[in-house]
Image 1 (cartoon, one colour):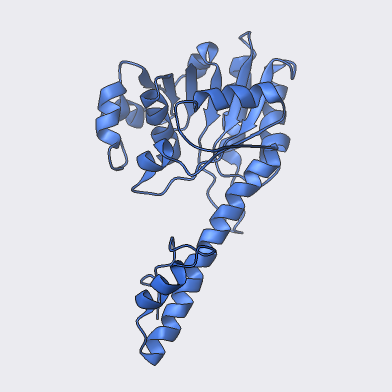
Image 2: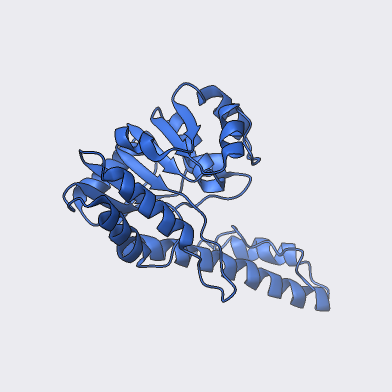
Length: 260
């Protein structure tokens, strides 16, 4: 399948390389020309275990980077993987998602055929429907029967992103219509993982809820660590015992350096 990935940052680059590893023809769209040059030279701008070797294997074959959106013309699916950093009020800055959606819409105005726009960026529930869909449709001047929309959140750990992408706990696909969801599910067909089909907002909320729960487990472990330190107990011994409970699991229970 032919795929375009918008955003050459952490999620975008890892996704593009892994899609290429799955056998798809991938075009990575990135506005930073120096980053595009580095990627096309086989030099990833971030470090991830296995990323450089995988990039070198596919770049120039079924993977390339560009600053131009015209590669969308020949793509079946367009993944939005731009950043959504927190602003001064703690809210997600959606300006890059909006800009990407408008640029995708402008390019789709010039083309024909069914396309699926997929949001992989972490965004508040409702973003795909109220922002991405509206901007793409507004700028493309095409009908909803010609463009499908999907929310496909990422669950990647820094340092283990390639492994997590290729061996996920689950693949979440939120869609408005069945056809769009089916196309995205086909992209992942060579990955052995449970696939959960949801609504757009359901997929967005799964990502937020997962992040919140992991942060809660880490914070809880650190607080238990503070208590253990005060009364002379080995917190790692405690957490090993707690983690053996199948209802809790040992993952993300290690107290970190923040223990006071």
